[in-house]
Amino acid sequence: MKFQTQIPLHSAEGRLLDFDAQTVLLGSCFTKHLSNKLEYYKFQTLSHPYGILFHPQALLTLLKHVHQNHADEQAIFFSDEQWKSFDAHSCLNHNSKATFQNQLSLRLNECNTNFKSASHFIITLGTAWCYRHLETKNYVANCHKQPASLFDKKLFDIDELTDILHEITNLIHGFNSKAEIIFTVSPVRHLKDGFIENSQSKAHLISAVHRVVQTTPLLHYFPSYELMMDELRDYRFYKRDMLHPNAQAIDFIWEKFKSIWINPKLHSVLKSISRIQKGLQHKPFNPESAAHQEFRSSLEAEVKRLAKEYPGLNF
Image (cartoon, rainbow, N blue to C red; front, side, top):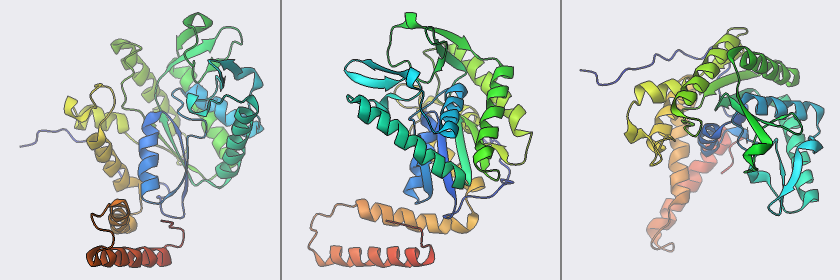
């Protein structure tokens, strides 16, 4: 007897991830969970250069800035003793304007370099709701807790989102025409918008993505949202806020992603890397004991073996 509906996952038709792959991860907070997993297993990644970006329009703005290699000065402002940008997440805020501007410039330079060599882009779309700054008429990535009167709010329709996603893919392939682009929709529930509004938002994103991924073999869809909603249809897979997937759910979705997007030849290697990582994090009761010294020697030997076989690995 089955107590769970299962989503059929088909083998990826593009280049699979291996240790030579260079992956750029952009989008909502769920992308961070995927980047944490890839970093844990020693894949080459660039993650969230402008911080968490929930809306496709914010991603498009970032990509345009990378293409121009220049941040929008009009989006930079001073509030609560910090310099901020409506185009970036608050994690980049700084009390020095010069440092803040330099930080944005360094992030864009890093993107420019990495985008040209990236083999994969993983993009998580969080919401179709977006805020427009009334004074500048520009859509923002983050309101930075500014007064609501400074913005109006809009739900982007499917046609608008489709156009934005086409622009995003065109810009990415302008940097690297062979890059695989994997879209997914965040399973995080944006209930501040409202229950019905959240459903509308996710539906618009999913519809737009499926229109776009059909246009070229280099575009793909991974069903993070559907795995959470259908295979993990239970509140025990959420954190206490009942909005975000918990560690168990993230591990489950990661295993599904690994099964289709990571080269099967590496699956046993990932188990070895996990053993090493756990060993490196282990805190012994007696660091000077013979047993611990033997454990450390065994660990170092395993690290050397993997590093010899896969020169890019760095522990």
